[in-house]
Length: 148
Image 1 (cartoon, rainbow, N blue to C red):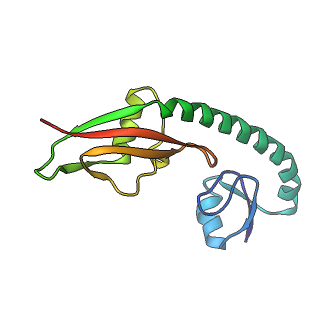
Image 2 (cartoon, rainbow, N blue to C red; image 1 turned 30 degrees about the vertical axis):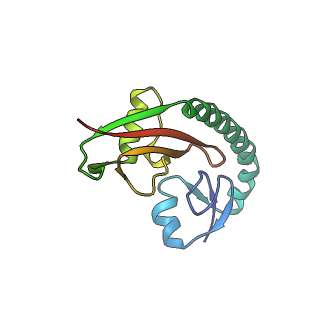
């Protein structure tokens, strides 16, 4: 089934793109969440008008992400966690913890945008990438210390 994406969908495509997906995926996930439109003749005509709006929205989002990225580059976060003898943490520092700490400093970043393959489980200094936009990635400095 062909659909027109109204929002960026991870591993599928970007706004305004026409993609081929399974009928069930479109009917049960994309269409009810208003992430896509069916690629009918009427919607194809609307697509040209929508593309101009998508480009404007994309430009403003990219600019906002770049400004936020510059601000996040100067941010450093510090976490104090209980740790064992070999500096192994008894817990971990997750993307949710990082998002919470950023929110406390006044930066609203969704935890899904914080690129953390595995939770941090060892004391040390880390550079964590934050994917703010498709084209904009910022780094946040994180220090994990042993709690006394």
